[in-house]
Image (cartoon, rainbow, N blue to C red; front, side, top):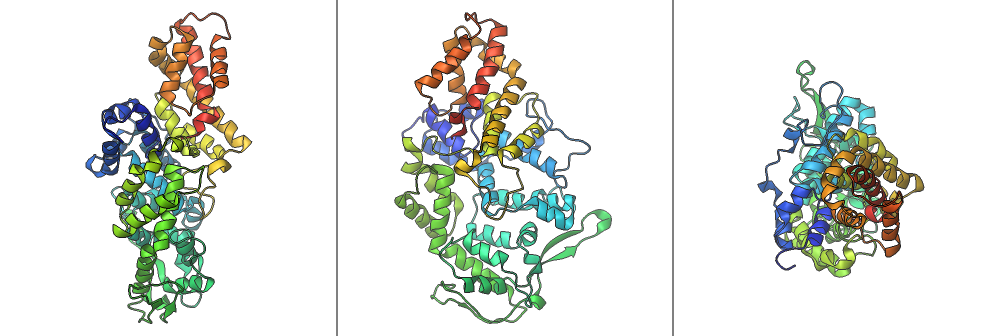
Length: 487
């Protein structure tokens, strides 16, 4: 990682730690060493988060809004705002980590909306406290605020999160009928992983979180009424709870019997124990490997050991953990380039950044993304989306190709403007777009097919009409190709 990272290195970094690179982003990071570029991405709190103020302004991707823009209560508006942020945020790693946590703590809008209504469902997932009359902070906003924060704090916040208390039925967890869903998933999916807890642990965890319920507060007259976390001591099961793994630093695996008044400490003790369990560090390291480094090969044991060690030694600081991930030799190894399958949202946002967005609405990407297999705020179940090659059914790949055609055609006049200087020959036009879109390397056969396409209608003249027609078609072929689905 010598000084002056190459364009190829920066593109790799910004695909993984962001969603690809707008031209101005490459300009911002050019001249930096890879290490300095990583530090800029990690220290995003030093960059003003003003991106929402550009919604609706000229020069930015558009939105399709009927009525008042209300991402706090309208899930379609919330989806559009998040896509807008992914395209235009100057804090790309913050948005990428928010997406990572959204899949890690997978919580679906439909169940929350089915419980409290559509507007409240959007509110508990997407509301900004600064915009909400009851100061509700939706789950995704909490995850964004803590994207590189302390994992223990994220875990405690998620245990008290309104959407999660609906999603995994914590609101119905009482001493008479302990509800096991959250107790199981906090161990299996959120922290230690399969094989590191037992079925009796699940029942013990259910009793630990009994009484972690919801209450209705506020005034309907001024729209401040909302559901929020309540520790209900009257519904807490107060007996001792014993686990198969240590809870306390002295090795004790039993949470002692406590009074109902003091019973909330049971949950805090379990959260602390799970955050500090060495298996949690290893579990997170494996997930970070697959999301940021390489999903084509199993996690490198040396990488897992190193990242897990930083996780524990830093006191669960995710910024320190992500620094270790992004400066690792495994991240920068040539074999890790394009060794990940793009999620639908990653494909769409990268295409918007690299192909263009003028005159395009992010709303027009939501349906295609759903057809590709991903709808923001709607993971299919608590395990999150089925990633990797499972994204690429025949229908989903066709949806990607159709979106590439839709966007390229929408941007044909803008593509002419940028490509005109490179349109004197077919070869120079091809080289320009391969450089701009930066797909995984093509073999000679595919490059020859692109060249054949450019020459298919006769001699190359480089006229505006020819460049405009061929540029849009070529961009469609590149962005719809298998190589462009890798990052």
